[in-house]
Image 1 (cartoon, rainbow, N blue to C red):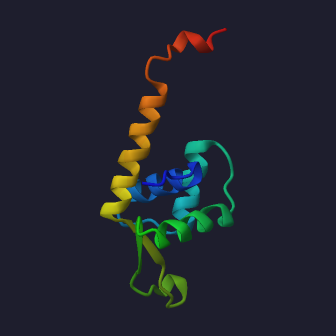
Image 2: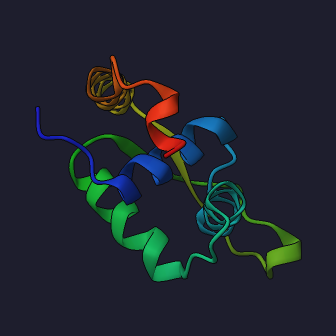
Length: 107
């Protein structure tokens, strides 16, 4: 399996955390909150497009909303393949960090 990029991982985790309410703005807010950096919409939509093409997320339209002038939102949902990709990247990260003591960073 090809590993996720860091931005793909962050976006995929944001989609998973929002459980069916993940759309561009909410994903951007989640990524900004967690990383402490402002994310542009491009920084969200480029990985979302890649994740959609890889089959890690699916895209569905919400019901039209009067609040949005009768328009729908594009909602993103994690797929089985997306969950597997997250498991794999977590496994790799844990293996990389294994046996590295926290005191190594105190120097």
